[in-house]
Figure 1 (cartoon, rainbow, N blue to C red):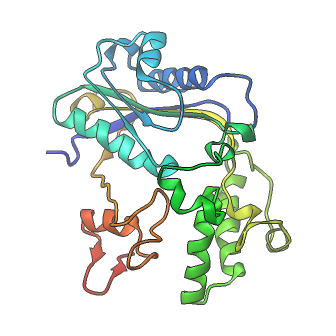
Figure 2 (cartoon, one colour):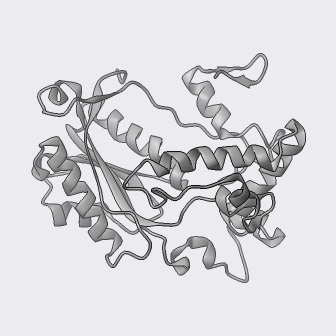
Length: 281
């Protein structure tokens, strides 16, 4: 049984900025050690690991540098930022099923340098799944997303002012976070509307920051979590899903491009109404 059997008991993070003078491995080790210290758990107790596929921070390097014990489980989840739930859920499942006892999930990245971004290296000849989009000029994630957003705006009569409200709301959260790159850097409607266009209709402020840094969390069985100092954040459930004809970030080739893998994921968890095709909010 998975429900409420595991909990997050520690968290650690490095600074977040552009062009940190450190490797992704060093950043990962720093964040993980901080998370373990926060949880009050020794590195040699860790026997499960989870991370993303996009960065070069292999499990054996992490384990050796931090002095972990024997590992019983490790996994990597693809799809970039959207993989955080899967990475956490997979490690939590391993612990809930009895495969492991203490897990660490982390991500470390250095994206301040534009040449480090995977879409900055496009070959003249393409043979993998990118062949369905890059020849049409959809090179970056924002290019793929902009196509869907333009369709969404057309079908539901949304405007750029509506998009601005999202960016401005998120910026207000960052303005209150002392660790955020945009701490105290306010964003007005005029700022948004006058920003340079990146991939129409998405402008500069519709895009995420490409920053450097690392973050890690520690997961344990709930019985162990209750013996630790920190109040545990209990993991109730998680879900993964992929729609038919999905292609990395988009669903261009499905019957309804706006009905993405998010719908499948929500349906798996039971918060999706198939009768009227609407998400429960």
